[in-house]
Length: 231
Ligand SMILES: CC(C)(COP(=O)(O)OP(=O)(O)OC[C@H]1O[C@@H](n2cnc3c(N)ncnc32)[C@H](O)[C@@H]1OP(=O)(O)O)[C@@H](O)C(=O)NCCC(=O)NCCSC(=O)Cc1ccccc1
Image 1 (tube, rainbow, N blue to C red):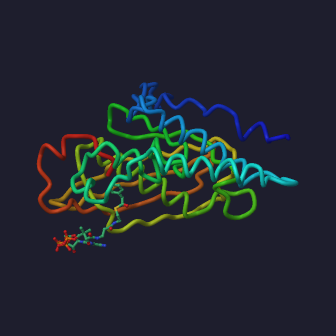
Image 2: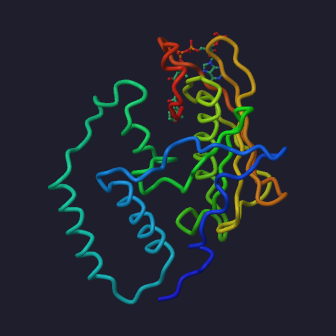
């Protein structure tokens, strides 16, 4: 079978440089975990792209294989309970996140880097499994990535916030498979209110921008603020 080579291109430099040639530092570790679950998620991402973006004559054999895989995982795994996520900073909390989770096959290939001024950047390409209008990225996916990037910008600035108001202004279609650059930064903080903004470019073209208000949850401690959680 053939595939669009651009869909499998390696991601463009995820440790790129900001204007001024500062080098970004990876925001989150994407190391393989000892259990293999991160590798499993990576393969499932491939499967997701192939199923969404290919034509097949007959894949009933694959249905059987995947059903057996699901049965196997159900048998050997222990489900994480919602009560295990009662506090911020549980490792699986981030790993299962649909916007950035290393163990969530739904998550886009988001590998953000942070710059000394606490700007957060992610360079990525999105394949057909993220398609909305023909040839374009779904607007909801753009909003999802903005929400996550804004949260990371807050974390880079040592804030924790829940999204209260997220505005996305779409200025130009976001093309599939093209190099995309998300950049987010925290703008200001007043008490528990946190404002942050972000942009999405392909090349020199601004595809969308976001402006958001986050509210720090009641009872957040300095220790929780100081650790780079995802929100
Ligand atoms: C917590 C809060 C946002 C605020 O409630 P409380 O704590 O009771 O605070 P309170 O109502 O007292 O307001 C304080 C001040 O703020 C103001 N203000 C408030 N809202 C607005 C507004 N919309 N617009 C404008 N202003 C607003 C309000 O007027 C007041 O101002 P004042 O002091 O009088 O001048 C609550 O509404 C909520 O839970 N919403 C659902 C949030 C949610 O589910 N988000 C999605 C999930 S998060 C996600 O997915 C990202 C993520 C991923 C991973 C990890 C992390 C993050």
